[in-house]
Length: 102
Image (cartoon, rainbow, N blue to C red; front, side, top):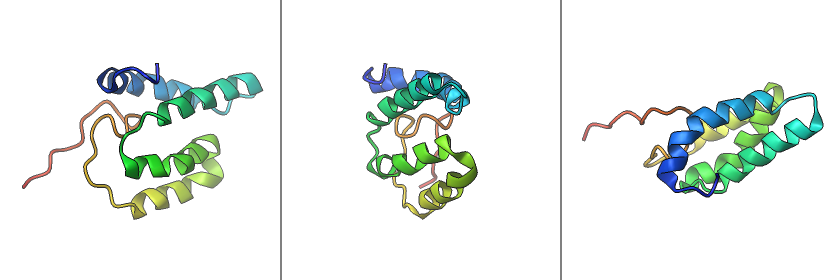
């Protein structure tokens, strides 16, 4: 599914990603591994270079939220983000980013 057309993928990820995150810390190593692999395959199709460069830190924070979230949030806040499309960072929500006034 990670190699679907970007529009199809952006419509599906807000449903899929939260479910994968729920099982990312499952006690069974095979469930955790499958969730990690699925999330990693979705990161391969992110086209926004700013977000793509942050994905290792974001994945670390998802895998170990107690100790890695602060660093991922700091990296995200310190990164100048230009134009974010719905496909650029689909795991946040299904909503479009707010329109900017000119």
